[in-house]
Length: 195
Image 1 (spheres, rainbow, N blue to C red):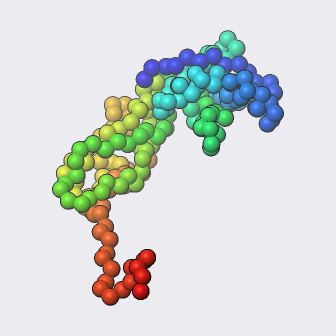
Image 2 (image 1 turned 90 degrees about the vertical axis):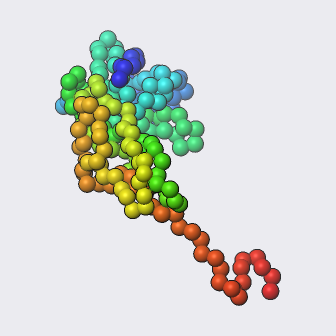
Image 3 (image 1 turned 45 degrees about the vertical axis):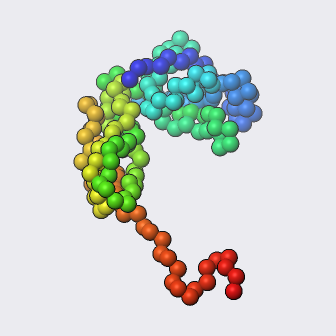
């Protein structure tokens, strides 16, 4: 995964008013923490951060007032209506360090013939991977699976360098039979029918 470079500045004002002024200037308030260091409150360029966060578990190289820091996003708060980023928490990482992250699960292939549905019990898997080599997602083949079949976390082949960090017996995907609607019994009124 490529590292994305962003310039940040240290934040000196705090509170709602300061955060609103920051957002009006097209900046996003954030906090960098980790490795036992004191949290650093920063402002990030809004548009560049939005583009960077399109990639799940993106590795960001920050330059904060002349100092370099390698971070990954830990929590992103978005405006519920507009969808823009209001605040971001970033976790400091080191090259070679292992981190626990969630990666997306994608299914491919066709289920066995019949009226079956694929249900995602979990959309993500918790894995441990090197901070500079975090996989974006994992693809699982569901070809030929029939109603009642399921795939547990331990059955999924993870990308090189990633190790399962969550419950290995947790069901990730399962195939269920589609339920048909029952026809109304004869002699009973249906909704909207006149007597």
